[in-house]
Amino acid sequence: MSLQNQLLLDIFKDKATVFTMQGIAMAFGQGLDRNTIKNRVMSYVRKGELLNPRKAIYAKPGYDEKELACLLYTPSYISLEYVVISRPAFGVII
Image (cartoon, rainbow, N blue to C red; front, side, top):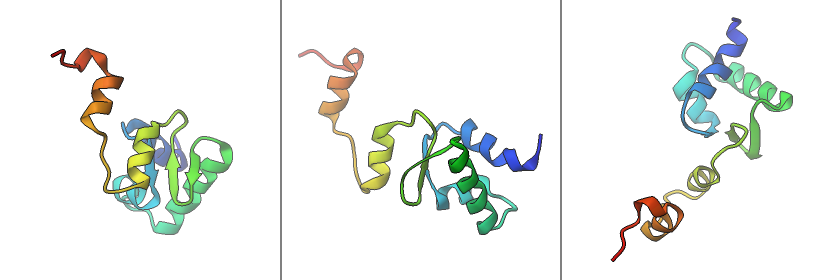
């Protein structure tokens, strides 16, 4: 396997679906300079392997929209009411 694709494989192994360039560099870019990481990520976006839903934010195809919202608007949270409604198996019936 080429080192060129190693960054992409590392990104897809992670459970997170939305990333910033800084997050990618900190988590997966050991031994790579910032320009190399940027060029590889932009190459993945051009090939359609990663999405770019907003400037400086990258996502896997089929990314979690709630995760993107939490990244865009920080600090943010998901209310307990939303969780109970969206996950009825975890809801408490009073």
